[in-house]
Length: 146
Image (cartoon, rainbow, N blue to C red):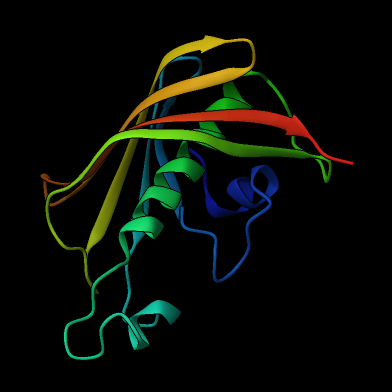
């Protein structure tokens, strides 16, 4: 488990772009299960879409990437600093299966598929009430920036 204070120590993201509220389960080098509470107060809902609020798909993918980054840092026993960032390197096989809206709890899951030359490949999925919302294979890399 990891609460919001620990997440804030691990990820550089801040409001309104921090999209992981809690880590429910983590196995270093294997998998992570995290939670994003989706509320009507999210800034994107005012324009996406006012009559039928829907969480943008790219933000669901970003939430999955943030969960994967937490797994990367934990698995590498690395403490991030101002010069360390986890970047997207690729997304494959992305499929959106159901809309996500206010009041939903998005359960984020990422499992390490392989690690090679500093590139992490993950199998990711997000569910709401046990129903698949989105799935994708993601590649990320941890880099130092100057």
